[in-house]
Image (cartoon, rainbow, N blue to C red):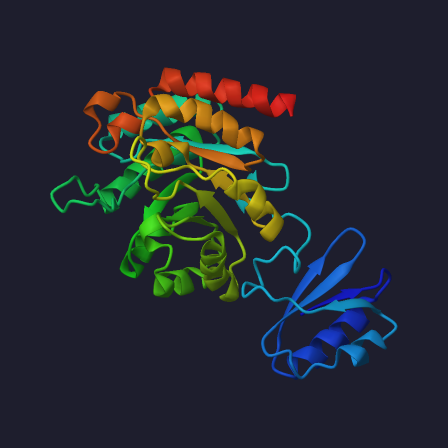
Length: 332
C-alpha cells in the first residue's frame, strides 16, 4: 500500500503518521519527490482502513500494491534512484561504463588494462578475483590476491573497483571493494543477499540465466529489505533455445525494468553474447534503449586470457566502442 501526501504536509505530520503505521506492525518507506511525498507500507495492510486514511487532510490518495516487491517498486519510489559508487553516480541520467578483464591475472595485466580503459572513458574498473566456473578444472581466479591487485590498480588510476563475491565467508576481503557484484549463479542465493542487505555498500545484482524480471526484483528486495537500497540491476543475457550466441541478450528488459522499478539498470553485452565482435552492436543498442550503463570485458591480450578471452575486447576495440556509445547517447 502507498499513501500519497498532499504538497505542504509538514515533517511533524509525516512523522506522526509514520509512527501510527509502525505501531500497527508495518514497515514504513518514505520517498520525497519534487512535488509529492509518498509513504510506502510493507507488511499486512489488510487491516488498514483506506477510508479512514482518505479522511485525513494531508492524504491525497491511497493505493494498494499487488506486486510482491515493494522497496524496489517504482510505485513506492517514483523518482529514479541514483547510486553513488565512491563518487561515481549511476542512474537518474548518470551513465557509466564499467570495464576491465574477466579475471585478474597479473599485476602488469590489470594495471595495463586499468590505465587503458580509463583513458577511453571508463569510470569503474571491473576484474574477477573469485571466478565461478562451470568446470572445476578451469582457472578459479587469484581470490584474495586478485582483490589486492585490484586495490593497487585503483590507487594507480583512481577508478572505483567492481568484483564478484561468491560466498558469505569472503565478505571480509571486500572491505575496500567499491561495488560488490552478485553474479548470475548467485542471484537467488538468499542468505548471501540478506547479508549484503546489512552492508552500506552498493551492490551490482546480475539477472540469473533463466530468471524472470520479477524474480530479479525479488532478489533485489532481499537486499533492500535489510536496509541497503544501493542496488544496481544488470541484464547479462538469458538462456534460450538459441545456440549461435552464448546467451540471448534481453534488451527489452531495460525499458521494462525502468517501468517496474526505480533502480538503475546496466547491460553486460560481453557475457550476453560471448563473442567479441558482437559486443559493439549490443553495447550501442543497450545505450539506445535507455540503459544506465555498460559492463564490458577488456583484456590487453585476449588470445592469452585465462578466462573468457573470446568475448574480451582489446583496449583499442574498447576505445572504439566507448566513442560510439558516446555518439549514440549524444544523439539521444
